[in-house]
Length: 72
Image 1 (tube, helix red, strand yellow):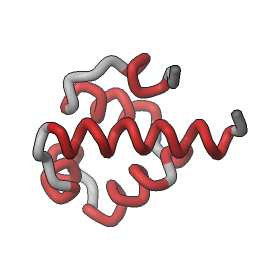
Image 2 (cartoon, one colour):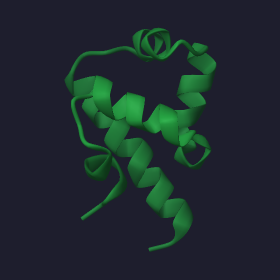
Image 3 (cartoon, rainbow, N blue to C red):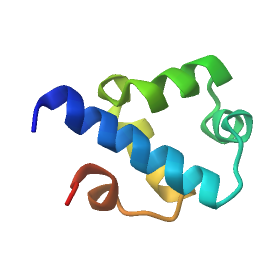
Image 4 (tube, rainbow, N blue to C red):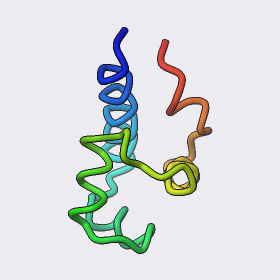
């Protein structure tokens, strides 16, 4: 699996869990104290997510970083 595909799967995992929890992108951005456009870009282009933000996203979504990063 290529790197770009891995990043896409990370973004998909984040998006799927966010939707399951009925959290909007606007709400996530607010919780992360970033612009909605920045959050949307992070979800679409996961390779651009700073590590600290990734851990904060995992915390908000009640996931471990491992659940986000390791795709089965």
